[in-house]
Length: 341
Image 1: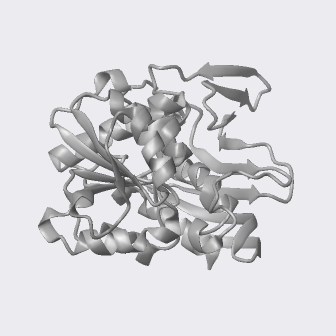
Image 2: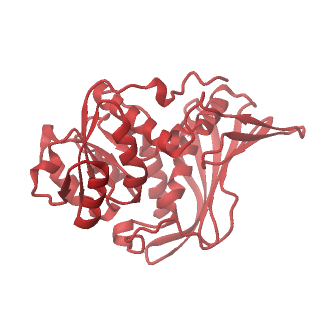
Image 3: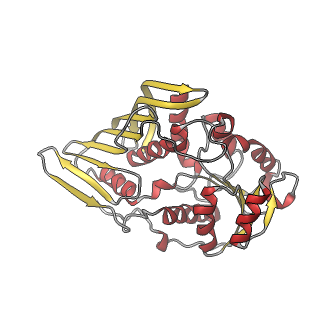
C-alpha cells in the first residue's frame, strides 16, 4: 500500500488563468473559499455577489474585490470562467437556467453541497456542460485518511473487504447557523444533505463503488427535514466484489461519527474531521494506528478546499474529469435519491 495515487496541493499547479465569480457571501465563502481563491496562482476573484448588499459589500471590501448585486439581468455575473454557487440549494434554479441559455459560452460551475437530491436534478445541473467543467463541493474526498483507506481496499492490505459502516450525527445536533437553514425550500433537507452526504460520498469513493442496491431503510422526517436515516446498501465494487454498507445519519440519537471498514483480517475505523490516524484492530486482537499524513493528502480545511479547487481547475483546463467533478459523484446522488424515496 502506498500513496502514489494521491496528490497534495503542493504537487498541483494551475496553468491557465481563471476568473471566478462568487455567488453568495456566507460563512463558507468568507471562512474558506475566498482565502483559498485569493491565494491560488493564476486565479482572480472577479467579484462577490449577494442579495444582501451590506453583507456582500462588507466582505468584498475586506477581500479587496468588486461587489456586484446578485441580479440575474447583470451580464457581469456570467462573464467569468467559473461561477461558485455558494447560495442556498433552493435559490439556484434561476442561475442554472440563465447559464444554460448562454450555450457554449456558459461558465463552469463549482456547486456547494447539497449538490442535488435526485438523479434528474443532478443530470440537469450537468446539462450540456463538458464533464470536466462542473464541480461538486465534496472536498473531503481528498482527506489523507480517505485516500489511505481507499488504497487499503484497492490493495487488500487486510484481505478483501466484507462490509462498511457509516455513522454521523448526535442527539439534537444542529449543523448550520445560516439564516435559511430552517427553510426547507431553501435548505433542501436536514442532516443527511448537510453533512451525512460527505460520509456517504467518501465511503463510496473508498469502495470504488460501481452500483448500489437499497436493501432496507428506516427514515424519520419532519416538515421535509430528514432527522434520522438508517439504511443498508448492497455495493458492487469496481473489481466485481460485493459488500454491504450500513448507514446511520441522525439528529435523534448519539452516534460514533466515522467510517468503519471490516476486512477479512482486521477492522479499520476513522473519522472525516481532519484526524490523520486510522485505528486498526486485527481479528487476532492486536491494536495499532496508521498515520495518513500529508503524504496521502491534506487534512486541514483550507488545504482540502485548495486541493479541490486546484484539481477542478486542472480538470476544466484539460477537459479530463477527475474526483473533483460532479460527474464522478452521480452514485452519491443515486444513494440520496434512494434514501429520500
